[in-house]
Image (cartoon, rainbow, N blue to C red; front, side, top):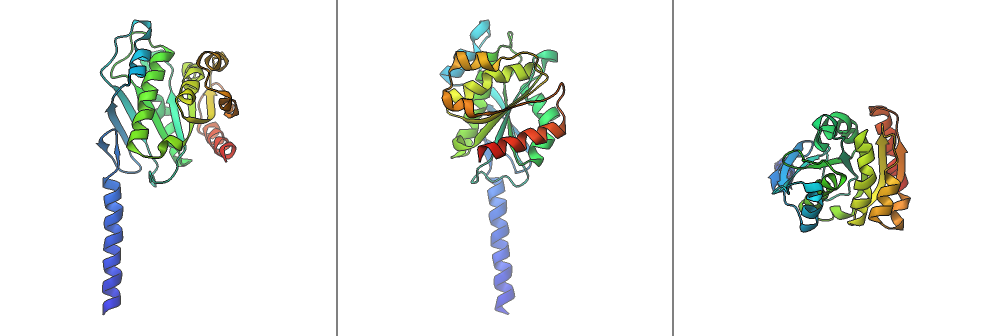
Length: 234
């Protein structure tokens, strides 16, 4: 019976292909599978080292990048990327807010989530430090997945992180990212205007949608914001 044998053979090939694709996924040189969260130590460029050193900070030897992907993640397709910036209160790192505030809803909405931090807390946790580590994570994404430099990017921040994205988002745009949205919650001061004036990301940045949430991050408004960003980007 040739037909069953052929069908079985094709199924084996198809399954092997999927397994091979999953096994071949690497971020920053670290293997991972779709639907997981991966952490990698990634290099800092000269620009990123310069930013990190502002305020008298010792420049670390590398940045720590964290990537969370949906279960159906396939880097051959285009994915929206949510870049997270946390408050410096309570020594929180960007990856902490990724895990605690945005991961569940972000993945459910079909987003890739990304955060960059130093290997240790900064002596002076400046916007430049956060920007340097985030740029290093973005660079790792682009080097890991060819074509990802064209993926749409949104930035999210709560409290002090909501202020921080006022500088991080323009910095990403200035460095070639297609920033489609900025999601701020619990931010009682406008730093985005200052960030735009200082960093000068270009007029196209003004097309980015801005979603101002309430005093806390919750799944409902995160879902609304991410859905709105995707609609605006079409």
